[in-house]
Length: 111
Image 1 (tube, helix red, strand yellow):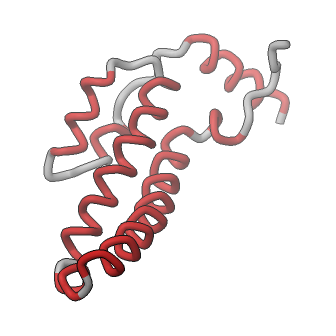
Image 2 (tube, one colour; image 1 turned 135 degrees about the horizontal axis):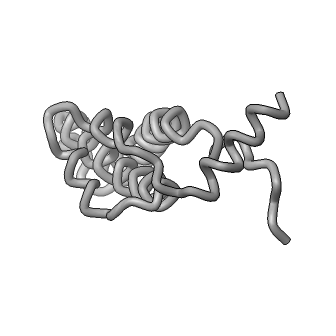
């Protein structure tokens, strides 16, 4: 069954990318910090920035892959996330998903 109206996440891909990276980064970083705190103790507390960076990389891989697949772009564009401007490079990519763009335009006309 094909949907006529796209859901909110498909209408707002860039917003979903930013919210998803922030939310996943928080959850993954807390989970990694808890795992490392129980296994290696004080090292995890001293290296919190490193653990947060690992959480950021994991969340960018997950959300960036989803974002690029929705925009029908090559996954090699994930390398932009390694640049100094990070995920912002993924936001400027054009959406090549013709079906999604046409459904988005129809949804905006419907109100």
